[in-house]
Image (tube, rainbow, N blue to C red; front, side):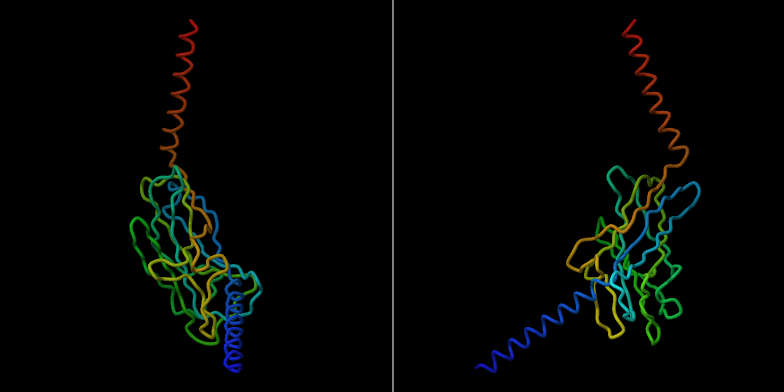
Length: 222
């Protein structure tokens, strides 16, 4: 009976240390983005680079990665941003050792999440750089009526597809700021600037309201 209890305690301790080690690794890579200002009358598309920071200085080797991305309009914004082309960015973590970045589109109305992923094509797997690196360059195309600011969200899991990274020994881990059981996190924004004609109409409308108000005030005073 005593030996059985000792085995149970030993097993529980082993599980605890495995969980602790997993949590430590999971906290090493943090998904990041940037804030993009997009002017439709100058450019036809907006580029958004998804990268990561090595927050604890890990020297693990990377086997594969996946990340879900979604563009969500903020209050007062209109239209949509569609994720179209995707490519390897500058400072790509798997540069020279890539199977090829691929994507799975996951539609669940009204949401549209794009899951990007890639895997090392050969060994040895690349070391994760201490300063971090980039994962994917996503091209966003705005609808004709798109205006305002759109939040670019990293999605932990969607319709059974998880965001995660895998070490060379095939151990799988969550990102530090994107636990699988958590919520989507903001990693950047895309601000769609109104076209000059739209802006002029808006300014004209404001000026008209001010002039009309002054005329009414003058008429009342007289």
